[in-house]
Every structure is written in structure tokens, then in C-alpha cells.
Length: 114
Length: 115
Image (cartoon, rainbow over all chains, first blue to last red; front, side):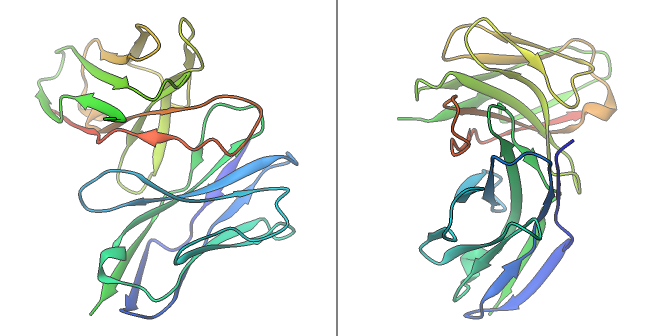
């Protein structure tokens, strides 16, 4: 069965610093996709970034980048120059090729301090 | 476009009462999903519908039923609510196909409390 593990329940970072949120996954499939979502205190789920298992380059979207290490089965989210508005829960998720569902990790609560 | 909408936003039920959570999407997506979110457990899939007329169980289907009314609407019903069903419920939709890159779009959530 597929599984996502986020080992950091909470992270505290100073504003303007970079932050790395950890995500490891477990699957025997070769073709899969990895997603990161942000959930602010208002509750909605916001898609941030996607990485395919066959993508050769790490994905980037503005201040977000994904540090994808396939052999280690990790897909860490890096947020550069953190802002107060980055304070939120962050979820890592995975989808297998041909599957409908996303499998989510437990989430990491990120707090940015001024 | 409204994206994915859910009603109601908040609901309090007594144990044993029934209710239906409504979800609609206007993105012409084939797939729709219902998740529940509990503290420390991320999002867990309750049911999903890959296309109009089909539904399948997810990770935690017990105590729930679903109806894919048409391509736009996917409802979740609690026939006899229990305190263990106190949670935040999210509806989502996505394209479907061989690609793994189809992201899911989420509704704003329904906060349900069962007393």
C-alpha cells in the first residue's frame, strides 16, 4: 500500500528564512505523482506544486520548489524567503498512475515568526 | 467560475440524526471525491466517483453513503450520525486519465459536529 510520511508535526521559522518541509513516501510503483497543498487557518486546500516520478528536473513554482530524491523516496518542499502569510498546514500527497485517489500525509504546521 | 462549492459550511447534529452534505463543481471534471480531515491524521478518502454513474469506497467508508447525481454534483449522506463522525469534510474534483499530474480542486469544507 502507498504511504506518505511527514515527520515534522510543527516547524517554527523566522521571516525571510528558507524552510524545508520533509516528505517521504513508500510505493513499489514506478509511475506516480507527488503534490504539496497548503491549508491556511481559513481552512481551504490550496495546490502548490507537482512533481512526476519521471521528471528529471525538480519542480519550481515561484518561491516553492520541490527537492525530489527518487532513490531516497523523498519529496521535500522548500519555501524560499518565507513570509508571514506562509504560516499554515502543509500536506504532501501522492497519486499512482491510473489511480483516482490522492494519499495524504499527516501534515506539518508551519509558523513564520516576525 | 465558482470551482467546487459545498453546503452547508457548519452543521451540528445529535447522535442518530441524518443529513446530506452537498457538493457541486463547475469545471466539467469527471472525478469527484469526499474526504474527512481529523486532527493529526491528514485527509482520508471516504468515497470517490470516477465518472457519472459510478462510485467507489475509499479508506473510511463505513457510516456513509454517496450519490453522484450528475456530472456536477456529488453528495455525501450520514444516515445515523455518530460522535466519531465529528470532522471537517472536504469535497474535491479533478480530471481523470493516465497522467498523474491532475491536481484535485477542493471545496471550502463543512465543519460537522455530532453531539
